[in-house]
Image (cartoon, rainbow, N blue to C red):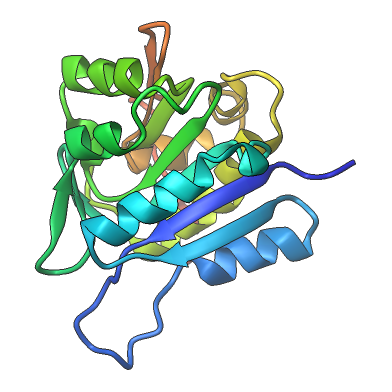
Length: 206
């Protein structure tokens, strides 16, 4: 059976052109493990972001139901580079009414710290099934470890709440809580892992 597809747009993280930091190795690992299939595109401007999102939403890529936004972020804002940002509302306009059934993962610091109203407006505008991501500044290695699990569940889970069910009842719950992970569903419901959870001591060595 073909594995679920992840479409990733990655911002340009650093000013130094020699820096090779990227989520690409995480995606390649998951594909080699036959956990997902993926398409990865680099974006540095809002025009590039709009172009690749438009291509992703063509019918021929319908089985790539997870949209993964890998870039720096602030509440309600994506940072494509150190100089170019785009508001969450602008991203919604780029995908307006074309994301039915899509699951959108923002691997960006603090972007899910936006208000409930703004996130629900985003879902209403795009038609996506859910939006998820982090409510705090995150560490690269910790988030990468979390995403190796979250992305494959989003891509392959039959239920929209598959990540919630898995992360809320396993050893991943403390890390999800520590990262400030949050899910907002199109039906208006939101979910966070138990706030009392803490990252296990051994996780600090990851």
